[in-house]
Amino acid sequence: MDNRPDDPSDYARACRASKGWLGLIPSQGGAIVVFGGDAGPIAWLSDVSVGEIGVFVHWLGYDSEDAVLRVLQDLTTVHAAARAPAEVLEFATGASGSIALFDATENGGVPEAGRLMLPLRPGRYRLNAYCVESTDCAVVLRELSTAPG
Image (cartoon, rainbow, N blue to C red; front, side, top):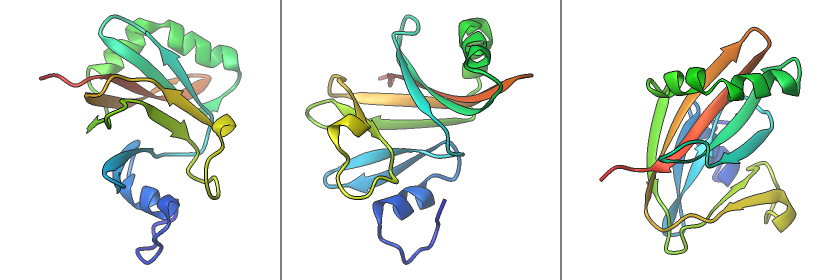
């Protein structure tokens, strides 16, 4: 990630804000949540368990997609890791509640086909980020839930 203080681009701002798995940068009356770390595909899994909205799964290294699925199916391991997240970030949505997931390296406007819209209710949310590793894969999980209080 680029971290030059003189670069005003959104990509450079995101790089400077995310020292680990999560960051936050201001944007036109709101905020942008930044997913840092190594490049790799990210998937969204909704309604993982009671009380959670879903999990962003970020593949870091894996021998096969089956290896990732085995880690995700072992929810005991996943939730044990969640009790001690590496990073926590709270944020509020705008009036619409919706948030978009897109790649910050896209040049210019992000086309509809290049983003994922998550229809959330307006309110406060929490992301818990942590890495889960097995002998044949490593993934970063970012659990999205409503913020307490």
